[in-house]
Image (cartoon, rainbow, N blue to C red; front, side, top):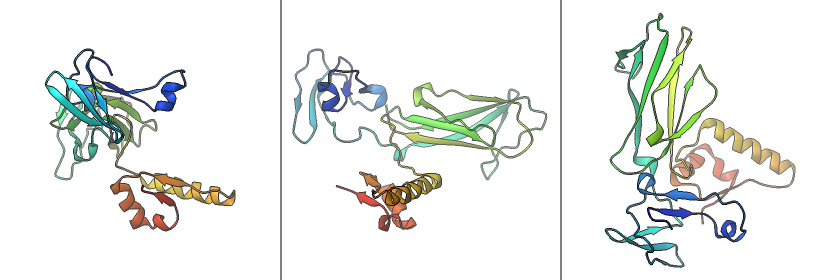
Length: 216
């Protein structure tokens, strides 16, 4: 607990008396209030935390995700080619002049809350490395020396603890490869506490019969 939010970390890590790596929740990352100084709080066995706050009593459950990115939308409303704005066509594609020296991509996360999710992005066809920042640190992305061709700007959202409701086809292939490798060595891959979106993808892909999926 601090004067403007809460720190969350496993009890074992705290008791180990070593280096701590807590997740900090404040108003920017999903916390609903500002805690009062030296406030008295109550934590139940189910993880319900009741906090004395500036606006009254606030309640969160520290065992559950404090924010949900599934309802947030991300997009690129426009780009700039050498400082000139270009807007997408009916299919969402941008046509950039071949003479462009500098391309600036304006990515936005649309929401009406105080959450501060992680945003990962890259320009497929040009860069291999993925850039990940918090929404509050998201700035336009500049690219130069682009060759003629087709590029795809990809954005993905995760909550403040790095959890996503998305799994890619490459992620599915990796799970299948890991399961085959572990089976050869007498082990298995366990998938624990996957969200409903991922479970639905597993069912459609037939992975429920291949992987040991633990939902409780």
